[in-house]
Length: 402
Ligand SMILES: *Cc1c(COP(=O)(O)O)cnc(C)c1O
Image (cartoon, rainbow, N blue to C red):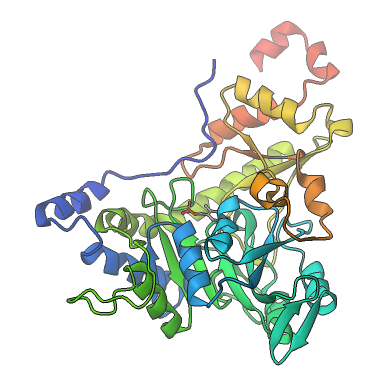
């Protein structure tokens, strides 16, 4: 039996041990210490922003971002249905309501439908966007760069500026991705909208075990998010509080991983791009199996690879293929269940969801770790390649010699 090939595992170096030793020797193991500042500065430098604010997770970062933009009860936030549910839950933490939007062929939010919704389903009164059906204010849109593929910023920002909604970039999957053309060329995903969020969970492109980062060009917004993340302490000595805050800070231990991991990020991306190309070569020509492309006018980080399966042509559906891969110890997983169909969200408003339904049950993710080798890819692609008649007709001796 083959060794297990995992879907996505972190690439960690023992070099981190000396950072961890320092946290133990100095006693700085909690939410203060030099690694936190160092990691924040490295992420800010890498992504080209003035400042980045670390926090406990990507989910916490999204919650802080929404609070810092003033999203709360009586508000609505437009969200994608095709993504991980952590992109949407923070909306409900604030008391606001999500409105679910469809995706396009790239799996990212369908910006045509977003614009149609804002134009036709909303009233525009004194700079406010009001959902005609609910009379609530649409304050923000959360977009996700799904699997690290950047969405079209020129289009997105034009919509933002026309309709006066705030943009939260869930860039938890897209650290290191940027567009190569257009007005926002060479600017990193996460740094273009009103506020962006990264994640350093163990399955993301770099990891701190668990962790997140908020970036914004609006320094006041970041300061307010920081204040909320420290239990909203108005006076740090006398502990006075005028608002409800959270315990959302990153620890020095997490950051001790981060300062090492961020230095390796470009190397991880390089490997992921090479591995994607190997898959692409090996899988081309297999009928009914499409390796979803990343945008060509972007440098995508190639975080996750997706296969689209057409049963009629391939002879097997996604569920059967998943079983086959897992039987060969190749960890793969189906696309997330669409969020507008999940129990807590079935009653929420959704707008013309069609495309996302067609991806559900037809898409799987295949191994993509930064430590994946060419040999691993050969094993995976062999299992993905259907055994046609001609294979069986190869004489046994010849087959053994190959
Ligand atoms: C991973 C992820 C998150 C949450 O990040 P955590 O650090 O795990 O809390 C949010 N949104 C998307 C799209 C993600 O993939």
